[in-house]
Length: 203
Image (cartoon, rainbow, N blue to C red):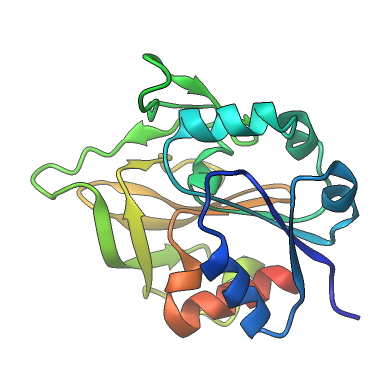
């Protein structure tokens, strides 16, 4: 029996490509902000685009912050969705003038990337070095290319399960218990991205 898959409706994500990537693997998927549907899911996706301040504002308005913090099933944050799993973010946009409190699921802060002479945003294909044996990267070769679009990142620490380098190393993927996050866009990363999504859905 296939798992019940829900994309959490954050109000700040273009979910069409994520939804299509999941459906292409043969899974049904629902977009929802309803607590009962989210809690009943077997697998959850937390996508996001825009700024952390706007995303957290939306999550608070929809009363989803505490709900996400107490989930027990596997959750995959994508791009901004991964960054929201940190403690706080420097990416405040126009709605705040200081660091934004995030979900606090991993003990790391989201920082603007220090890339030396490399341009921001970090946009395009880059290699990812994953932790050996992590099930999210099962069957994915070392130093595979994934697609990135971002200017902020979570530093490498004990929650890091994959690294990338763009002027400095940063967390390309993180895990804390049932919470997983990827800074890249697996839904835009061709066959290797589809493999990662499939791995997550089979956890």
